[in-house]
Length: 242
Image (cartoon, rainbow, N blue to C red; front, side):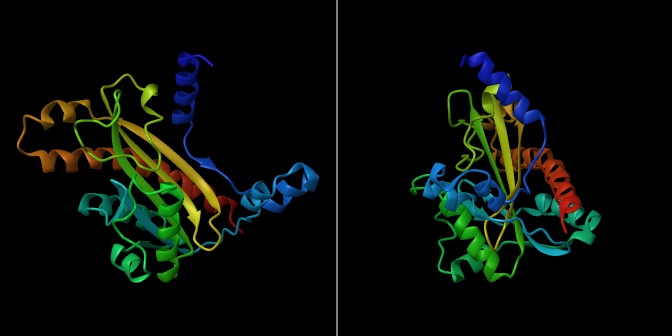
């Protein structure tokens, strides 16, 4: 497959909005004779949707591989979602402090761990269970340059990587990704991902002493691009719930 074709496919994926899943694992397995399905594949597929609203919905923010509480500006974005969609239930931040109480390492989700993404999701699910949450919205914010990690150093992208970068003709891309996951069984109901042009921030970052302020502004720009997709995903899932 040629590089231009790959870029076109990734661009289409980036533009299509949230991806929603509510299919049955039992139906997936039953559609093929057991002898044609590897045991590990069958185990991975054997999970069922259980969408019910209203519910307790967690908000888990990943930056630089660590679970962190959203800053005030991002909290306001999710507060707006919660207010507009109160019929879906209660929205609750997933707490790094409670993660530590469960025996998980609140700052240990990093790119040096083996099986990083799976470990991160598992730690967040354990913490969400301790908080008695039904579902959790896990979102990550980071950045990539065309040569790899951006010198702008907004945040490393540990869970989603830099796959969307070839779809945009920009020097530095802010990348946001989110997933709506069942806390009890890990069912992945929906995912979405966006990019935002952070080239302007990157050009002034090294020369400007306001680095922390610029980093916060850039992070907010990515969050502002991601949040509408999260709300669309939530709306579509609520429409499919029992």
